[in-house]
Image (cartoon, rainbow, N blue to C red; front, top):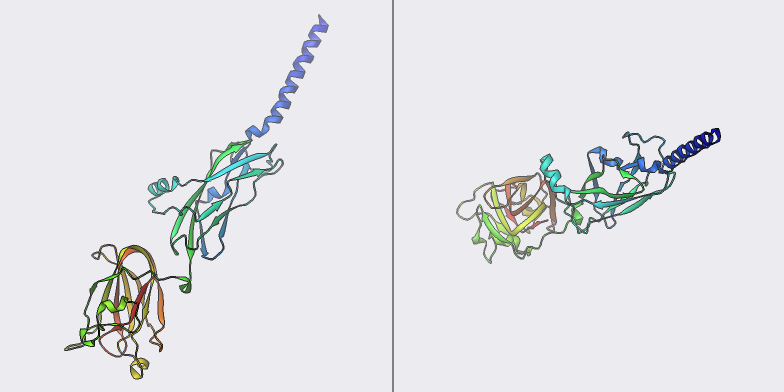
Length: 329
């Protein structure tokens, strides 16, 4: 009988020991994984648009069941973490936060879709989210791309910080901005024009004909009203307006050096319907150099518009104004 009791005790002890060992082997089941970047709210990155991608980092890290304990926790076995661009979350984020971020367009980013937390390690390390901006996104515009942990093998999601909301904004320099094709444009309005210039000159439409030798001139025949003078361009469709370019009418002699109606101060306004207008730039002290160079300026507020209104509020040396060419980019 004593032998049987002793055997029972030994059996119970061995069973308990086996359970303890099994628990130790299964410790990884209590490990959870989260994205540390997700705890920073929106992660906003500004960068200069270039030929090469701009790289943003994200990662996955082990945390304890008593989130957010991370110190001293290592993977008991290899953990594979799968990520995805969670595009469906942008609309929800905007609704909940009163924002209007557009989704980063497909084809303008690449991410590493999976990574491993090696046995004994604590994280995947930094992973690349590549923003391929050139010719893919509009400069100076915020875009959102949420990156989420999609699934995990070898551990569980922490229940916290599973999605990082990246907002990216690419900047550009004036030299890199390409003007929009003006072939479909028309004139939607103007203050005055001057057909007395002759040869088709003086008319508002001459400012968008692609010919630096023609020009719009405000009225001077009979009377010569002073500023403001304005011209409204209809681009035919909504486009983001980043800036404008102005080319002066060609002059020689004193009218070039001293000025003769070239725009000095300009206000740029935009509209979707030619009714409601938003001022997006106030440009001061535009030069009037020889050789008809382009004077190009970014707007201060990026908006989509179909109509662009250029109002000349101050001119050089006279009352009327003149512009050879206008570009919008």
